[in-house]
Image 1: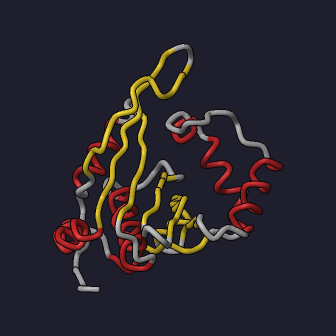
Image 2 (image 1 turned 60 degrees about the vertical axis):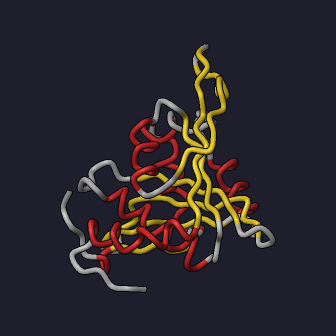
Length: 189
């Protein structure tokens, strides 16, 4: 994997001006077919989602940028201030990116969840056939908490869903090692 320059990447809040781009990404087969809901999302449905998100205290959405160019999407949902936990999801919208860009996005998202939001636990769910994402999450320290058997029905076939979670202490323990593997220069934050 190549090493990246950290300053070339950032997460920024999703804006209304991003909606058409993000909807295009979400409706692309390579993204859509790895989601629970696989229908094509229309403009009205997408704007309704954004309106709910815009007023939410428990959900946040971000655009992942590479050299000031939007290339991916990150969300934190079901954020519980009381229990300091949330779920997260992400996808790269741009298909033509250097190998390892998804890992950079995951690293920035984990930093945001644990360092900015102050979470204790971050969870995600991945459909079993998306083995590459399950493997990447585990490389970042996520532990499998369970498998929901036959959770999703897709084209007449049931699929398992893997629930994974990462704790703040585990992220902090491995954070600098992950950053050193990704970035040319690693700065303690």
